[in-house]
Amino acid sequence: MRCPFCAHDDSQVKDSRPAEDNAAIRRRRQCSHCGARFTTFERVQLREVTVVKSGSDGEAARREPFERRKLEQSISLACRKRDVAPERIDQLVSGIQRQVETAGEAEIPSNRIGEMVMDGLRQIDSVAYIRFASVYRDFSEARDFEEFASTVQNAAPAKLSGGIASD
Image 1 (cartoon, rainbow, N blue to C red):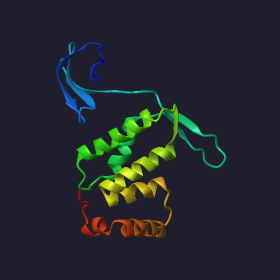
Image 2: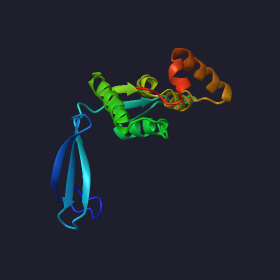
Image 3: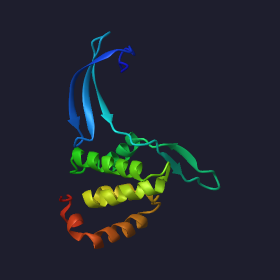
Image 4: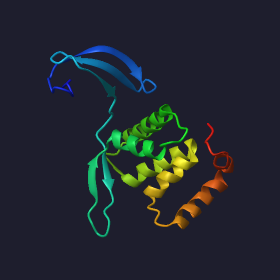
């Protein structure tokens, strides 16, 4: 494994342990050249999946490889400053990644992934759910938030009225 500090190609594994509910292995490594320590994660990747992003205004659809990191960033951003444990976010990301990779398709539309995220966030935290929906569904006015929030409130009034989502 290449050292992220000095780019030397040789590093030694100092410690390995399971991570992410045994869905990954966390490895502590040390560079044999500069001595720096860093952490890597090893995950099972069942297949290469391409995300198809719909084009806007007559543009052709774009295709790009599925990246767990992007999914994790968007969910973490929606959950920012909320009482959502990092483990819950990681479980949601791992679950969506598993669904995407086991679907048996080489390509998956980005809107299907967005719906998976929406379903997961709806169960975890109503505010994070609304935050994600505001970007995913491209809210343009305050009225869009009001209408969407009222549908969430009608579906789960206890979660919204309490301020912090309960598990």
